Amino acid sequence: MAIDCPSVAIARQILDSFDDYREQFRQITNLGRERFEKAQWQEIQDASAARIQLYKIRATLARDELLATYGSDVLLNIECWPQIKQSYIGQIDLRLDDELSETWFNSIFNSLFSHDLISDECMFVHSTRPALREHDTPMQIRTYRPDGDIAASLRQISEDYRFSVPYADQEADLARLEEQLRASLPDWVCKDPELCIELYSSRLYRNKGAYLVGRVFTQDEQWPLVIPVLNREGQGIRMDAVIVDEAEVSIIFSFTRSYFMVRVAYPAEFISFLRRILPRKHISELYTSIGFYKQGKSEFYRALIKHLETTDDKFVMADGVRGMVMSVFTLPGFNTVFKIIKDRFSPSKNVTRETVIDRYRMVKYVDRVGRLADTQEFADFRFPVAKFDPECLRELLDVAPSTVEVQGDEVLVRHCWTERRMTPLNIYLDTANEQQVRDALEEYGLAIKQLAAANIFPGDMLLKNFGVTRHGRVVFYDYDEISYLTEVNFRKIPEPRFPEDEMSAEPWYSVGPHDVFPEEFPRFLFTDIKHRKLFKELHGDLFEASYWQGLQDAIRDGKVIDVYPYKRKDME
Image (cartoon, rainbow, N blue to C red):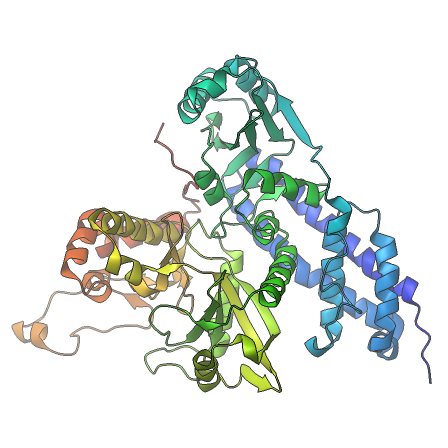
């Protein structure tokens, strides 16, 4: 018996639920300025986590309401969904956030059906939107034409982007920004009568900073432009720096950072603007960086499908020491690793599968301070068997048969995380010259310290669990032992009671499950004596329990410690 499918009404209800989600997303985002002006640093972190959680909460509610309204006989009839999709396309046609509404539709569909039923006929595996805006140009920008007077343009910018909190020292800021801009650009650029400065009309907010984002350009060349703004509580607003180096701007938008809060009426327009100034950034990263992480996930998946369809690339095991909890594979030509949980862990790992999942999800919600790699969680990936190197597939089937399964000519990966591929720090140090070793170990210590300042303790701090990015930054990426810093009990090793204690194979003191002894770090972290000595010279305070305890006290007192996503000289 044929079932009558009210496709127009179902599509309308899905779109209405998307509008509800978008309105709540906007409400959280649009308070970014107020929180910044009031220096509500803890509230900013709470809002960031709430905004991430919002998507799943609202999508689940939307699914349940659809089932309550139309019943499972209609909604779980797969033959209805091509009609629902076609109706939905017509209803989103004139929207300014149409690409996001497609992803929302996919989320509702996937919450109802097995991933075996994914197809372009029933959902948006490929977007119907890109061709509609090939020639779009951003309109929400402010343009400044210095005509030889850089100082005047910077002054106008400072007025146009003024806050309700007064500047601490506007004249000093403008002088510093002009000096930095002239020092960062070729001399002829500042004299070029065609020089233009473009800034996106909305400020971007994240943690304790606000950011003006745009570009500096002439007829022939362009540079990205970011002006970070700080609220020095009780002292006023400061325009902190001017950044035109593409690598530094890229780091500000890094996959290791929390998501920006920015008012964006037309997301594709802003992404187009960002791609113009950061051409090496993938569209998925840019969507994710401004809080549309589900859209970023959709764009990543589409890029992956395209890569597999258009290249001979095959999955291989990733470089580095094999993990005791996770198995990691990659596509050599696609800058991503795929991480699955093994069925059996090393006996030294006192964690469960559920604990590992919880810790990986936790990273999504914390302040990553540029030192934790963002992840995307996927279920039921299907790839052709031919796309796997045989040795790689054998290993995955051996260590994770409950997660990886061959079904005919396909490999089903039931659950995995994706992360940006980096060079493991231990491998990087093996071939680094003296200066590179020093720089990497300096970065390694900074990564540990900045994570600690954000109330994150990596747990397993071995070199193999940190990666080096293309910008030379060191990032932590192995989360199965991660915890909040305030959950750890940092202790100094007690003095031995008798001379025999020091010779004993067992400790002469009790050790609790959360006890950590920083004095043991040098021997534990470094087998290379030269590396151990150099790291002690650079970051020897990490070997003292008092250092960690002091950070814990600051965090418990409610202090949100400054971690800047750009290079700066201390100007306090």
